[in-house]
Image 1 (cartoon, rainbow, N blue to C red):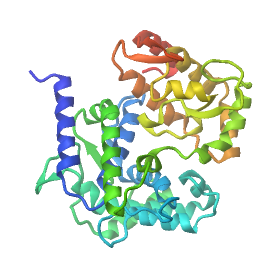
Image 2: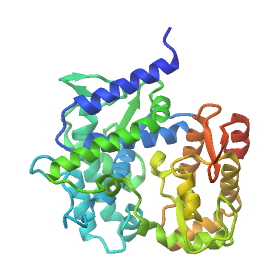
Image 3: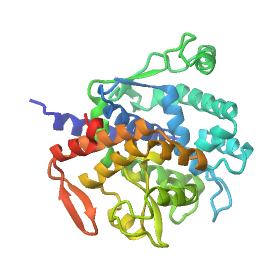
Image 4: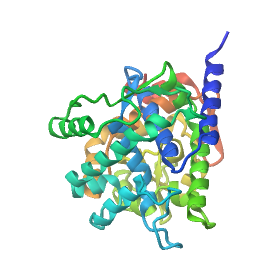
Length: 374
């Protein structure tokens, strides 16, 4: 009898084959896998359960989010790092060209969309088309064989551009997918749940392989390359610091002591586990508390305080997001919280303060999530 654990391990093994065995000339497969993991985590956290699919539009938006910070000029090399082994233009080139035309303050995808929504949607159109043509059909191929371990699609490998253009035009004009193109990636049974469960294992592996490939493409040893590619940009979060401190009445979100000059903007749901940069997921904290929490999930009392803040101070958070041009997607953050806390085993360590941890207790976590609990 094959258990759920066995099936999850088997999926992880097949994904390792794809990561290490499938040939690649770009970083597309890494970006696509991380985008799918992000979306699966959110789907699993929906109140009504996983949807069974994601769209090429959703994937394209996540891929742009992943590549955006990587396409700024690298300080030491003085250039935008290449992510393609050949001379052709790549998705990072498309993103870098858009950044070059955008206003200087458009340092994030959200700010770029606010600055020129039509031009940003043009970028998403182009990235989506590249994904439809290449990485989505090819991701599951190994040694000429289609493994089909994650999803199925309804278009042939080399699709015509016309139906895709018509679908994109309908989506932008009427907000509905039309035009004769089925833009869904339909997950195989239980894949969403298993990918969400494997997130903590797969993310660091994918990022490491991605970093290794970028280093090879640029022919040079670049110090702290993984940090450059994947760590959140501190300057993009700094505008939120003062408003969050005021919202929290000058107290650290975690220890509740008066904040001093060493204040960090921390991702409540750890950045390394989900990549959620929305204001709903940001808190002001002592640098020491942020460092002690590190990549751990926070204890049930912190989770309860986070939910309570979101409920009682929603209007204030929306206003801070508007003033600082920070994305505010409360539903996304809540879904991620449900997925991440719902998927941890009983007894897993949750960070409280300093070097103190509590053991995860399902009943306490459900209570902490309140009306957002599954």
